[in-house]
Image (tube, rainbow, N blue to C red; front, side):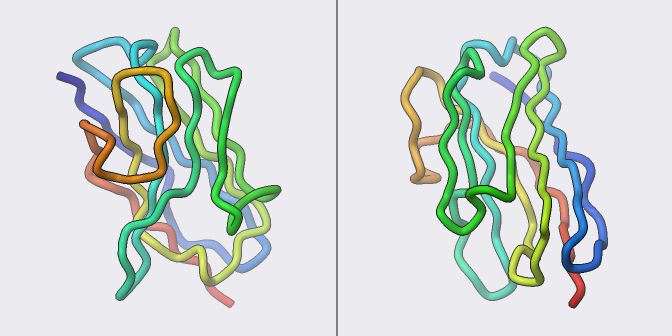
Amino acid sequence: QVQLVESGGGLVQAGGSLRLSCTASGRTLSSYTMGWFRQGPGKEREFVAAISRNGVLNYYADSVKGRFTIDRDNTKNTVTLQMDSLKPEDTAVYYCAARPGSFFQVAEGKYDYWGQGTQVTVSS
């Protein structure tokens, strides 16, 4: 069992940056592939980014590629999402998620553990 807590959300103007953090407790994160998802107003939750257990490999949704960077520090049990060049359409609740194993998955059903989410609002 692993507990995830996100932080770092807030209100930012278009073109600005935010850095989200996800801190885990209960078990070491090195056993899990980690992902970030988001759910915008009136939308279904969607995949944003994922990172391999050792942090070497990552994968991004086309909508955020080149603007967002996922990273992890297994010694601190944290995963981060650096979001640059933010757009109003990035407005959403952002969730981190963990799944045992080494393979990237974009389907939320493949992730076993979820945080409570953090709100990101990008104004135009």
